[in-house]
Image (tube, rainbow, N blue to C red; front, side):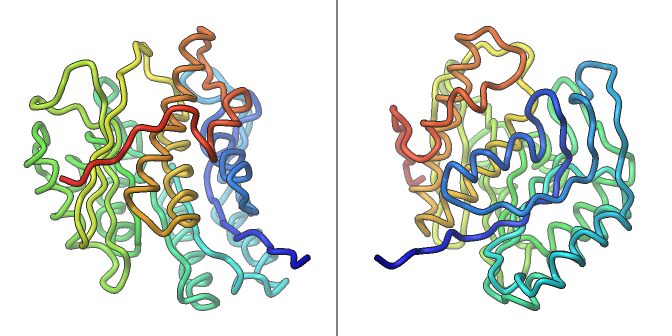
Length: 294
């Protein structure tokens, strides 16, 4: 029997010991999808900052540089299929993430860069340092193959008001025009709540050069929204896209898996997303919501 080795994904994000945000939300779903994940942590905290109090430390850009250098020294970067990044809290961290992307692409020109431009949300506003949105726009967007902004972040990156499907498409195309010239130029808008959609639904819109697809799932009464949801979305979409090579399939399966995760979390009455309990849903969701071309 021939052994097929799994694809490798390098994920650079925060880490919490209690709960699931950053790498603590992204690594396990990717592993359940069959990927080897090389995780580099930008911070290690006791819990996410939504609790108001936490312990731990923020790692320096030099720390990130040293860790990726150690991985590179083993000669394994040519086998890296993708780089995934999430919250980046400083100019130095952004520089190191983009340096890592460049190193991986030198070793494997076919590797993808999926960036979740974590900066804010409705109700919370911008929760990163004032210089971060500009750096995301000027530096990260230009290097990304896949971007996974929520609706608030899409407006922040483009300056376009998003409240209808047409305006969401316009903003996504504006963002695509600034992405990596020879890349996928794929924008996945999460948590889309537009005026011209059913009030009891929430949508995710994927826009590429080949078309656009919309996936709609029931809106669960999660108040406040659970931390780590966006991190899980980015990981699930990237994983399913690498597995299938199809935008519509990746959108459908990732959103179906996410709905199952959030439904279980809601029924458990948990403040933390039930990432481990929902593990059987990631590769083969029990209820599949189809993506429709728009």
